[in-house]
Amino acid sequence: MAGELTIGDLIPAALRMTLSRIIVGEVRSGEVVPMLRVMTNGEGGSMCTLHARGPHMVVDRIAELCLEYGSHMTDALAYRLTANAVDLIVHVSMVDETAVGGRRHRFVSHVLEVTGLGESGRPALNTVFGPRPELGEPRAVPHTPPNCLDDLRRAGFDAALLGSRYGSWAEPLQLRIGGGAR
Image 1 (cartoon, rainbow, N blue to C red):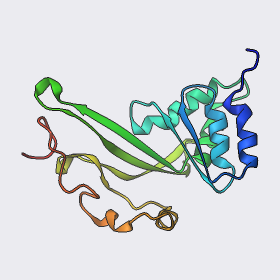
Image 2: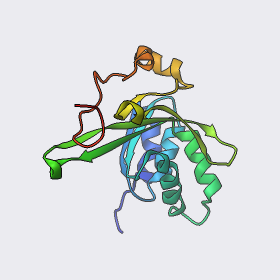
Image 3: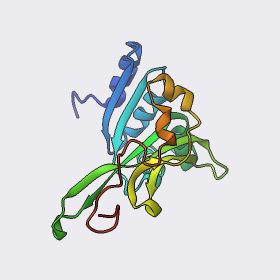
Image 4: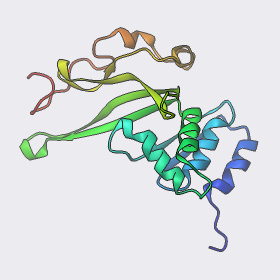
């Protein structure tokens, strides 16, 4: 298309500006590769949104989108780009109880740390925060301290949250079906 300017065209200029943050926005197609390149360049942070059915499906969704980018892309390269670029995956879930007289609950259900390539050649994931069904809690509560804890603390993260049973939540989510007891 004449005059078209893609995100891939904008990234080199943005990186020359030594920006501290680059927000790519929603990733739905071939812009995933420029997004991963942004995430691996420079010391600043970046983030994007992506639709996946579950938190552990994010790396496969990124790989699928990478494969749409061009014929030179392979699964192995897509996984390596993801492992090198992505530090944390934050998954937002929704429980809709409007049909049973309740309301919609939207919340962070998982925070996964990408810890490099695993033995299978796929990115290895560490569940830092996740649901605790045994506590009746579908929201993200502490699981495993992240390998990048010192970096998070330097950015202002309160490490004491990792020692709290419910993290930053005061009590379990009150659901009509499942979840915390009423």
